[in-house]
Image 1 (cartoon, rainbow, N blue to C red):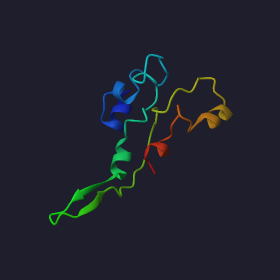
Image 2: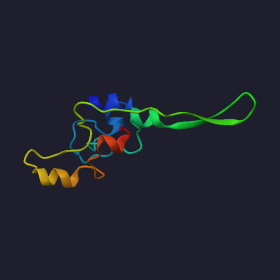
Image 3: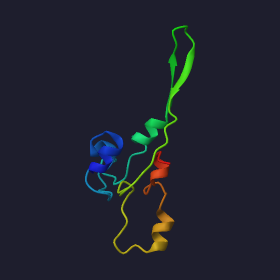
Image 4: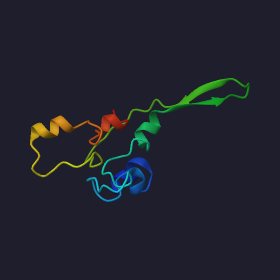
Length: 106
């Protein structure tokens, strides 16, 4: 749960990992992986937004950051202890097993 907070700046249950990385079946707060509607810090650093200049014109600012993920992800759903390499490869990157690159990291 603390990784979810570090990655999103939200409380763990707000980010979707209110307990651990398994789906507790009680709602999106405890789904076991990062919620799609909660951006990671990497996604925010890449996001641009419009701002008005003093002369009234709009300009796109922000974004442009390169991001890097090092260490344990543990924010991408549950993998059973007896999971085979083939099973992991077939589920990695699906909706309930997002990878760092799917959540804004280069």
